[in-house]
Length: 188
Image 1: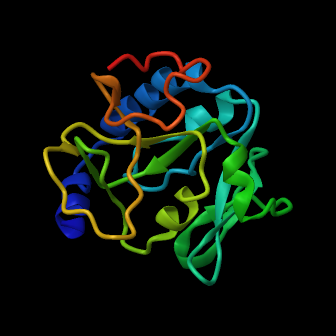
Image 2 (image 1 turned 180 degrees about the vertical axis):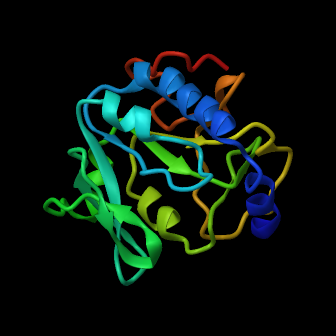
Image 3 (image 1 turned 30 degrees about the vertical axis):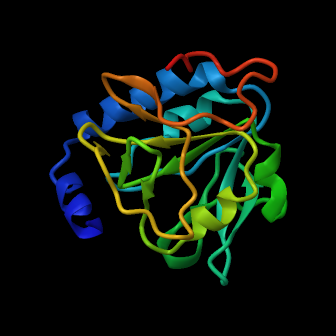
């Protein structure tokens, strides 16, 4: 499935990638209050660069040798990280820094209607998401919200996805539903 998903992304044009990046910014910017955990998009991943530059406080992942994620503040600069990733060069904030973020934007190759996320297969985000307390939203290109994926025992589901033309699509409740305010645009 991962190979098929990557092959579907390979012919995406710069215009199509730009549409997705714009949709991610438009849909998620209103949710951003306080620190936001996100990812620095690469190649044909759903674009996050406009979102990163528009927000006041963004934490980006730093891949660790054990496959888990540490976090660092994004301040406009990225340097090469492990396994072809890009990361901020600043001080590391610790693996638990993601718990302080009200919004966590994650990459995905596909997500199903139950929130099961198909990632790259390393499990790094699943390790990190067990520590997340905020809304977890996957950014997708059109056609990547699918009917069903077979979850694995370690999979941590997402609460919502953002897809061009559809905006934010809520997939499952957050444990804090009904406590305080929900992020804007989260009506089912």
